[in-house]
Length: 123
Image (cartoon, rainbow, N blue to C red):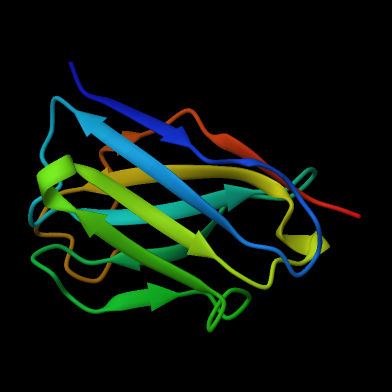
């Protein structure tokens, strides 16, 4: 059974940093497409970062470019999202997702999803 478990969310002040983790079981991250999405209250879910299958280049949404960094540790079967210079508009539930290695440009549907972790940016 595949399971993705996010952690690291919480309350942070504007300008602060958080690192989200997503540990996978039942599926390997190696060569998989990995991505982070978020959904703010009243808004649609958006893709904010992704690394395409077979270690393609990372993609970042304009809203997070230069502030967020996606990475993975295959030995721990864990992916990360380092978030710096956080803004109130980054407040959302953050989801990790894994897709097939053929998802080179993160344009295809992701196969597996975590349940989400809440990030609140507020003073």
